[in-house]
Image 1 (cartoon, rainbow, N blue to C red):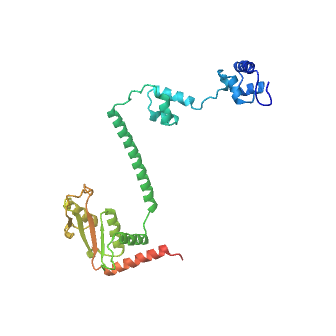
Image 2 (cartoon, rainbow, N blue to C red):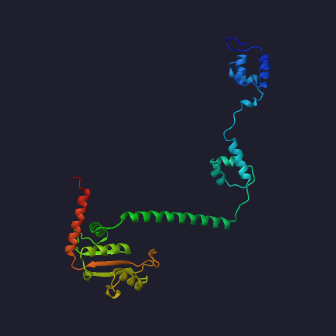
Image 3 (cartoon, helix red, strand yellow):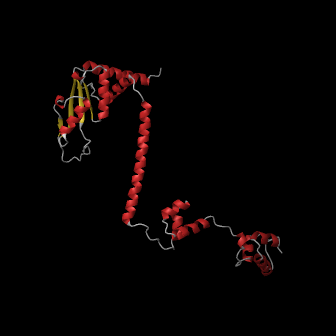
Length: 285
């Protein structure tokens, strides 16, 4: 039926055979092999208008997903819910269900806000529980503190937060200022370890003038284990009406200042201790 030049004669006769085979359930490949038609253009012309048999149709991978998406949409599901359930993109979902009516909202705006707030509360509670778990676990890792460990801690604490002498302004004085009561407690414990008696200490409060000054003074005095009358005159920070303060509320108590009298020698020792820590930490020997 085929010439060596690739041209075919009796096209109508070939078409009748191809159509009969097609209607008999043959695939294009089977028709090609049966009629020895190896030119795809000719082969397609021979069966033009004849649908392929069902068994040759490839199922589309997303047909099941599309059907399921439409089913869920008809049940009132949102795009987000369908996406989470089926794992497909919102773009695909939109194409599949855009002809369907938009479902009525399941909740009023007030109910939606309440549900959102409840969800946020649960999330924050879970996050807080995790924070507390980590902190508790870390606290237990410390255990008992030896004198040497407290000593090293105090040196590093002072060098990070205490007043330091500068080449352009020599001030060999031991003055420590901080607003964290726990930091103050550790610092006082360190001074006790060094044998610095409380008679050598002077205490002062630094606080914003709009705060509860008396309450802050009493708080720091109690923390230091002294009478509030033993405090030196409180330093008040003037209020700047252009500044929006964030350090407000019942927990704001300003800063506590602790000065060691006749502390020049102690300051030099602190500086030397710190350099010793640096040298030991950076030594390559």
